Each structure stands twice: as structure tokens, then as C-alpha cells.
Image (cartoon, rainbow, N blue to C red; front, side):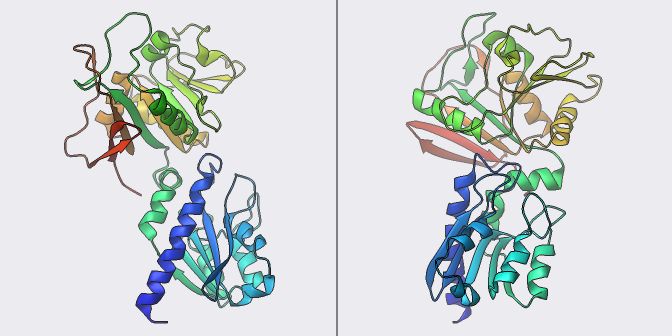
Length: 353
């Protein structure tokens, strides 16, 4: 097969790997999403993806799905991420592929995790496998951008999310009462989907006090993220939903306090930049991704510090006339406008993966 035809074929099956990998979106963290496809004589004979952290990896699930194992010895396996080469909760996938005698391995991107980082590829090459690396590499890296950011930048992947009115406000000015609801029932469901995709979710002290948010996943399937709040002087009342113990909560504070069941108090220095300390605290607890939902001051702080990776802004048709101004994004930031469930969204990416 000539090079162009081979490239087209490799990309076709790698796209299927990416499709499969996305099925693990809410369940694989802290592991990355990975998909695998096994092809023999131009036909898919096996597929798999990493379903849940602690369970079989994509390559293992794909191999198990093959009805006739003898076909493996003349097959190609496509995998969106370099097969692991170390013992974790499961044995190394690279060793398994060598043992099964699969002669050709096509890989989307190299694993940034230090315990793998090329070692899986080296094992396959040393065993005599034909290895192709970098097929749809950008798409494969985008798939695991949270995993890459965590392991290369040593901090969580940060997503900022808010809804704003047609005239640029996110709420009315108030000292109490309920916040203005700008999302529709359908787009509110997407907010909960976004929560399920992140390891942690953060709000500022004022938002916690005024809105008393639960910050849980209720309108989507998935686990609720760890809740994070700033409370410098520990002034938030314990009656808030954040402290109900149903979901772990981290309180970053300037005061010393012994942690309670379900609530951990983390003392930071408010005399220095606080947000890097918060991100360091989350990184140290193995939390790979953070969703910041508000309020406006907290969101703007992340923006001003450049501590963000992705921004999602829902454009609501309502006009408030006055109120709390929406955060301001640098006009030079790359923006894509999308239409979904009756609303426009502005989507920004701060790529370093």
C-alpha cells in the first residue's frame, strides 16, 4: 500500500479511536481517555476504550473483544495514546501487545506521563513491532488536554464558565435574594454535564454566601466534583450547602482551622497571589481539572492572571439593563462562536498542550 493510502487508512481508524475514547469522559480521571481499534485485512475485528479508572485499558478491552485471537498475529492495533509501560492498577499494555504478537501498532500521540513518556514505544520497537506515531496527533492531544496540562504544567486544567445577558451582565446587583437565571433548562443541563467532566468546581466567597449553591451534578449522569471556595476570614456560615458533607469541599483560607467531616480547610498566604496557591493545592491532591463558575470578581482574577485554559460563555437573549458586569476577556484571545440548544456560546482556548 502506498504512503498516501496508508495515511488515509490510518487516519480513518484513528478517528474511530477518538470516538470510542470520548465514551469515558466522566469516568476515567485521573487516567486519560483512550480508544483502541484492531484491524485485520481491512476489517475491524476488535474495539475498546478505557471505561473507568482502575479497570482495563483501551488496548486490553479491544483485544478481549476479538472473537478469533489467532487473527491478532496479522493485525494492526490503533490506539489514541501510547500504550503504558509501567505497572499501575493494571499491567503494562505494551507488554500485552508484544505477548499477543500484534505486528503493527499505530499511535495517536506520545504519553506525557513521566512513567511512560516514550517507554511504551521503545518496548514495542525492541520487540520488533512496526510502530507509527503521530497519526491525528493534535486531535489525540486535544482529547487528553486536561491530563497533559496536569502532568506538564504541574497544575489543573482551568475552565471558566459563565452566562451573560445580551447587554453584558451576569446578574443584577443585590445583597440577597435569588440570582437571575440566564440559562434555559436545556443549557442548564449542559452546565451539569460540564461539572461531571471536571474534578473540582470553584466559586468565590460572595457567590457562596448570596447563592448558597450546591455545585453538584443533578441534571446529568456523573460524579459531582470536589467543591472549592475562598474564605479568607472563615466568615461563611456552616449552614451553607457547601458544608453539608454530601461532596468533599476544600476551603482555602487565611485562618487555621481543624478540618471537619467532608470539609478540609487549607491555609494559604493572602499576602501573596492566592490563585497559584489554590492551583498548587489542587495539583497536590491529584485534581486534574477545575471548573470556575463565579462570581465575576473571581472569574476576572483568573483572567487577569492568565490562569485559564478554556472559557465557555453562554450568550442569553435577555437584557438586564444594569447589574454585575460580565468578566472581560482579552480581545486578542482566540474565539470560536458556536450554536447549541438554542443559544450561542463563545469558546476560547489558551492552548499549551
